[in-house]
Every structure is written in structure tokens, then in C-alpha cells.
Image (cartoon, rainbow, N blue to C red; front, top):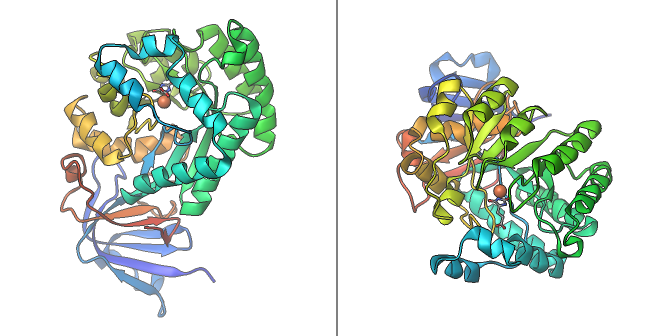
Length: 403
Ligand code: DI6
Ligand code: FE
């Protein structure tokens, strides 16, 4: 028999529809891992709540859908604080990468780390996200860059979800940087990335495929080859696009019906139109914008004007966004990118779900997953207002309290 629990005396922000979807004196009926009923307590049909139903009194607290971090690089070895110092002294992210630092230095540290070390550090990071209401997160590979290490990182990403009661979507980002053993042979490396893809997929480790299409990453032609392999295997794609320059990556990805294009500071009008036509989500990463001290803003007005759904994610990684607070990303999305608090919160719920191709979450509605967070807040716009403290009281993922 599945457990039935009535969570009541809550202020719900369902995010179901165009606005906050506020319901005062709301109730959520949870059956197993699903929401069986959502609405004002007074409208709850008594027949749905048989004797023996468990009850949880939320004492007027705010409830939102569980937050979704749709872009992280959570599994890696080492850290890059020294590189941060160099950048503060004037070196650019690109210069450091071209000099062999950057992503490559994390690749060396990741390859050198044993599984237990990688797992322990990734678990610590995922716990920080969960403590702020995150119930689903995406984790990319991309710091192994050879079959056995990409496999290790993806497998550890999966284990994090199981250990913490979270849902983890894994993304294969073999085309993140050129590993040193392929110096001067980037096309041969792309051949290898494509050759490893079916192996990793067959092992159940890949939900989607990503690439870094950039002047310090891979060319559009190389990215296309990765995407063509993904398409043959039936895997959805997404792209690190237009972060440091306009490579036309977003339009390329949209041609493959990409789930999302991420970063987008240099996105063109054509790129926006292509994303709109393909239904591709724009994932904004204010943490990277902030930490790299970028000055060029993503084209928010254009995205809005064309109705491209906007998500917001942490991009947690050791080089360009070492933060572990999705709530801080909400604050930055508003202060730096001028999103409204509603847009920012939609960006970590309903639109983030879409960026991961997961229509069964990101809102509070009957039939969806019972993923929600309970907050010591009066109104959901406060999620984007406070920063530097955590008002999250409880986290429920798949009907189970996990934090
Ligand atoms: N863009 C990013 O923001 C991360 N990867 C990428 O392609 C940064 C990765 C790093 O610097 O380690
Ligand atoms: Fe990233």
C-alpha cells in the first residue's frame, strides 16, 4: 500500500500557470512519490483523505516546487583558487586556459583523485544545494576526458542522487576541453568523444549530451559531429553556447532541437529566433558572469520579446562559478540580469524542468512528482530578495522528506 500524507496549513506557490499560483491555506496530498491533489484546503474532497492518512501541519509556511539546478559540473577533483588570484591580477579566463591552466588543471586533478575522494567532495556540494530546496539537479562530466574517467564521473554523479534522495540527470560533456594527450589533434579527440558515447549510454550513464562550442573549446563543425552522434543514439543535446564569443552555437544546437543553450552572453538575434522556433530553453548562469567579471549581458529583452523560456542555474564548477547556492543565483539573476523575481523563480522551477526535458516537475499540480520545499517566508518573491542566508525549512523529494 502506498503511503498517503496530507501536508496542510501551507501557503502554496504552485508556479502552475503564468504567475506565482498563490494559494493561501493550501494543502498537498501526497501518494507515494506523486502529488495526488493540490489546492485550497477547503476544496479538498473528504473522500480523498481516508482515516489513517498521515498529516503534516506546515504552520502557515510557504511551499514551492522543489528547486531544479539544470546546469552543474559537480564532480571534479581539486580547486582553482590560485587561478582566481591570477585573474584578479589581470589574467583573463581565456589566457589561463590557453596557457594550459583552466579546465585542464581540473582534468589533471580529477584523473588523479580516487573514487572515494571524488564522491565525498561531490556529496558535500550536492548537500549544500539540497539544503536550499534543490530536489533535481543536472551533473555533467567533462573533467575526465578519457573513457574511464568520464565513466567514473558519470557513475559518481548517479550515486550522488541515490545517496541523497535527489534526482540527478547526467550529461556527457566529453567535448569540454582538449586533453593534453590529444594536443594538436582536436578532430581526432572529437572522434574519440563520439566513439565513447554509445558505450557510456549502454552503461546507463547518459541522459543528454553537451559540448563547449567556443574559441577555447570546440568549433561549430566539431560540435555538429558530437550532436550527430547523439542524434543517432536518440540522446537529447544541449550546448555551452555564446559564453565568450558568438560562434552561432545556439542556432546550431536549435537545429538539433536542443533542450537548452546555456550562458548566452553573446547570443545574436538569429540565435534567439532559432531557439524560439525549436522550443530550446535559455539557461542563464549569473554565477559565471559574476565570477568572471563579465560585462556583456545576455540579451534578456530579446529572449523575452521572442518568448524563449528562461532558466537560471548555478553552473557550479571550480573555474568559473564555484558557488553552491541556487538562491544566490536568484538574487544575481535579478540584480545583474534584471530578471523579475517571478522570472528568476520560474527559472529554477518550471523552466528548469523544461531545460532538462522533465515535464513531471517544476510545478505543484496533481499527477506531478511530490518534490517541494518548505520556506520560512511569507511570499515567494523573497526567494530572490534575501541573500547569504537560507530560509529553507524542509525538503521533500519524491514524497520523502530528505532534508
Ligand atoms: N563553461 C563554463 O562555465 C564551465 N565550462 C564551460 O564550458 C567552466 C569550466 C571550468 O572552468 O572548469
Ligand atoms: Fe557550464
